[in-house]
Length: 178
Image 1 (tube, rainbow, N blue to C red):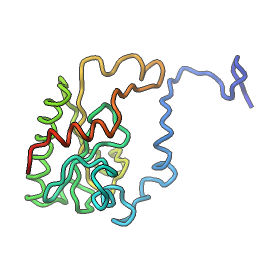
Image 2 (tube, rainbow, N blue to C red):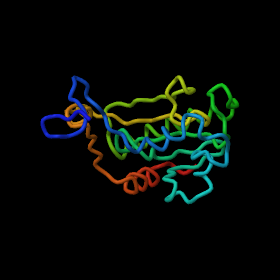
Image 3 (tube, helix red, strand yellow):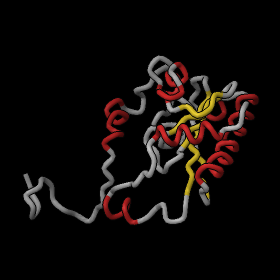
């Protein structure tokens, strides 16, 4: 086995690597690991308590949950209750609430965390990069100037300044009554 100057396995090269061991559950199971509602994390979550599932709001057709592996504090997901894979699979009513919850999420995050921008997005399908391709979900990621500092680039480290419990409590308390 090749080693470097510190006797560590591997040979140094010009590639920076982002180590994400938490993603191994998805890699081992493959993109098709969630075949139905019984094993889909987005179908299972609403059956548990809000605290346990990190749910911040439950609507009629959709709910809002903290991302378990956030890019930034307050990284939310808007998910339909129905197990559907594609944005074109949700009804007009589901789509209206989906959009409304996305807007409300942005307003609430502005109130509690004062971000200066957002990334909104849906990765559709396996080729589109969806980690859970079988269940539609939209990311609402708050952004601040400098949040993409040197740590992720140099040290393969992302600093998250609050626990998920703290963020869930802040966001759910600031969410307007439905």
